[in-house]
Amino acid sequence: MNFIPASLFKLNDIHNLQISGRGGKEKDISSIFSNANRVSAALYDYEIVDGENLYHIEIKKQANDQWFDIRKYHNLSKHEQEILMLFVIHQDNQIKTVAIIQLGRLLEILLTHDEFKRYGWSPKVIKIAQELHDECPELQFKAKLKVLHFVKNFRDEFQIIYSA
Image (cartoon, rainbow, N blue to C red; front, top):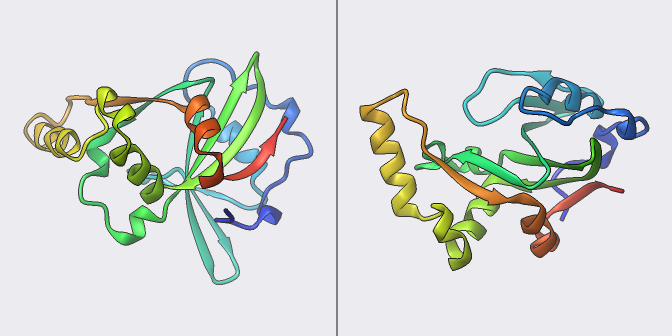
């Protein structure tokens, strides 16, 4: 799979990134992009312009368990389904894998494989999560994904940018 040109990434110093700990590492991780603009959008963190192409990128950094606010995925537009989910998988404070998949394909896999239903990955749960959010905007409703295993088991669906 090839969702974005590899030339848009700077990986020379990826082994020097300090990314362990909870949240807030998007800015540090963004140093792997050649040219990215931080944005404040509900579904993505960065935009990269490459000629006439515009890429929207959501960064997910985790050793394995990643929690998703699934109500955001209710009734996505075609454009939103093309958002690139960039998974940065780390171990012992070292990046092991950087993998990209389109949001729409990620959801298609999660919603069609029974093994993910127990974590809340179903169209019904996503719809209910959105309905609850509409009524209680401060309510958080999250579903888990074991990212390390997901990338390993569905590797052919990803563009692997980096692997240690």
